[in-house]
Amino acid sequence: MGKDYLSNLLRSKNTVFTFKDVSLVWGEISAERAKERVHRYVKSGKLYAIRRGVYAKEKNYDKLELAVKIYTPSYVSFETVLAKAGIVFQFYTQIFAASYLTREITADKQAYSYRKIKDSILTNNAGVEKRNNYAIASAERAFLDVLYLNKDYHFDHLSSLDWEKVFEILPSYNNKRMEKKVKEYHESFQANSK
Image 1 (cartoon, rainbow, N blue to C red):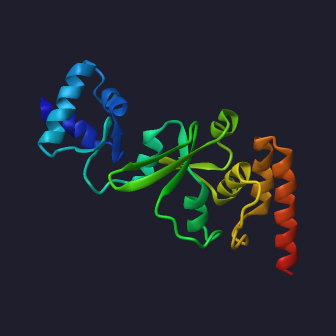
Image 2 (image 1 turned 90 degrees about the horizontal axis):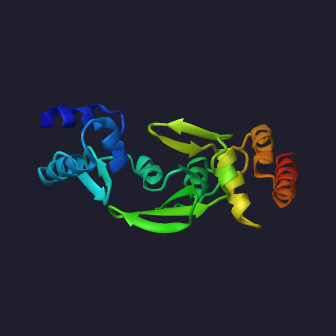
Image 3 (image 1 turned 135 degrees about the vertical axis):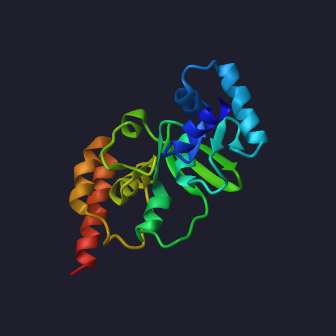
């Protein structure tokens, strides 16, 4: 019977599970029995314990998926997205996420940096994509998230931004300072690209 429970988890497309996820997959068993079962699977090496209450199918799990599982709701954003899009050139080893709180944590030797944004922005899906079991900001949304938390920020290369999308998402922040700053960045970008 134990193998059925484990195979239900292993068939899931998720690479990372919180205890809540495990309980939902296993549904009919009590929380106490689920804890015992998870502990047994971890001890026998069939599940990998990342941190308390968070497990993976194996050591080679998706770290971006873990980022959004540790604190929910959250989505990958800020410098993690901007660096991948080539908007900032600095390399960051930590993974940045937007969340309902500000925290710096390390899980399984990976640093995670959570930055608090207002609930009305956090739960607004404009510019947030669902990808491989986690939510991630588009480059435009990450650009705006950074501006939301920083009065001045140096972006290295803004040509990969779709300015139409930036202006489409901007009203979600309901922030006059940001509107002015985005306009300045856009005007500067246009002047430099001539």
